Image 1: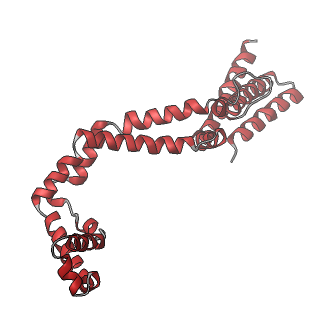
Image 2: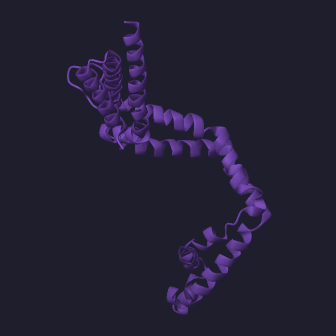
Length: 234
């Protein structure tokens, strides 16, 4: 239900009824209610739309750069502060025993490690001996077992308390907090740069326009009350 439309309709109905019946109380109530409702409706409309001849209308789309800066300031100063980031990392990391690096280590491609090892052997004093037995191709069957054993060793190393504690300390260091904050700020800047005046208007309009409809309703109500008081005084 469009609260603004209903309020204006009721105000006009009172105005018409008062005029036709020559009832000054109803007439004034309808007149003041309509003036209050239509004025507040126009004010709400002017927030989002440019009205020719009315200076200051369309303030939200015309000031969208300021809105973008305000959004960034809110995010960085209220949400992504050093204290909040540090608290988040501390809560998520908890103790070093909670760190599970195995899924990460299992994603590492260790095939280049074997290739590097083979290159080192070929360039060493054992290179000639390896060449006599088929060269690099002769070592190829060892690649899969080597990679598997290396993967297991890295996982075991990553599970040690020393590695976990060192990683935890590094993640909580001031330099890491600064880097996290800079990355968050870069993401926010990137997203805000994608915003257009129309999109900013839609975002704000979606958030508050439904509730701003009550301004029209209460403008009509208080306008009607003032109208009744005015009619009684006159």
